[in-house]
Length: 108
Image (tube, rainbow, N blue to C red; front, side, top):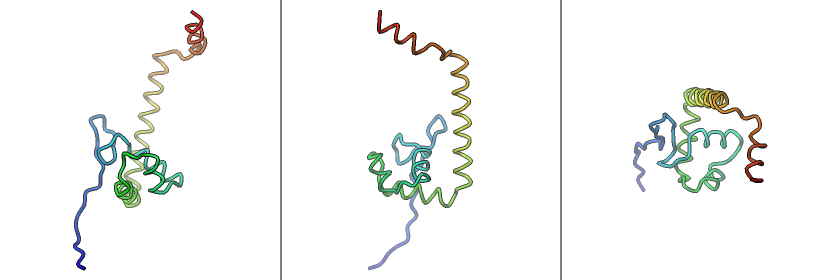
């Protein structure tokens, strides 16, 4: 048996919003890395996200392990962006009294 070395592409694509997604799915890089760093195996991640191919999950984990600084910087930027959006939304929509207003709608 002869094994030939091939070059394969890591299944990561950046969408128009700058979000990195895995294997042509809607699953984000953030999701895979968070699950992995919390102790999930590739197989457990595949069970949780059946739209992902197991091989793609292994590729992404391998990429993360080889490029941790770059991936962590991306994740940190995404977290900062999420906090900014949360802050902006909080300023636009006053969350106080939401529960009471929703309950009032049920009564009426």
